[in-house]
Amino acid sequence: MRRKDKEITDRSQIEEILKKEKICRVAFHDDPYPYMIPLCYGYEDGAMYFHGFREGHKIDCIRKNPRVCFEVDADIDVTESGDPCEWTLKYRSVVGFGKATLLEDHSEKRHGLDVIVKQFAWKALPFPETAMKAVAVVRIDIESMTGRKNGYEGA
Image 1 (cartoon, rainbow, N blue to C red):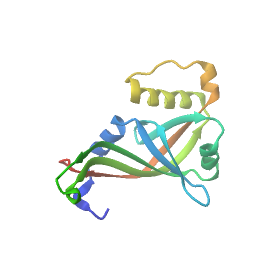
Image 2: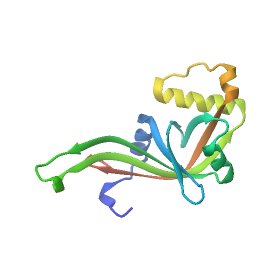
Image 3: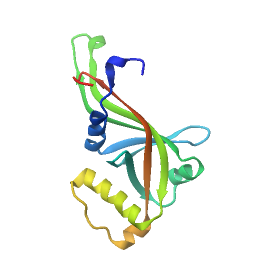
């Protein structure tokens, strides 16, 4: 990272962002351009989970090349000034890279869905079997990630 003064080096602060937020953007390999979409997600122990239809463009991309990039931003606030060139944006963000795996095992799928629901509801909720069979659950095993901040104290 070029601006070391903006880097978040404390892993617990990076994980705090991932545990707090609800939406991530995931970029998939798709020739000739990357394919990036916003997704609801859950984070636990170095992995992100998301779900969706069992067939579709993002699933096709994962099958072709499971390497992905993701981004999560938090605490965004514009600081205004009389001079528009002096405006600044307060934020905290995480960018990471990992490998996406389409989960097939029933217990792994259920666990992934539980992680997603806990991100929103703070507790696991039951899923009907018909929903379990109809949904695709994807786990991103995070291989590297960096945090960045502007206007917030701490590293």
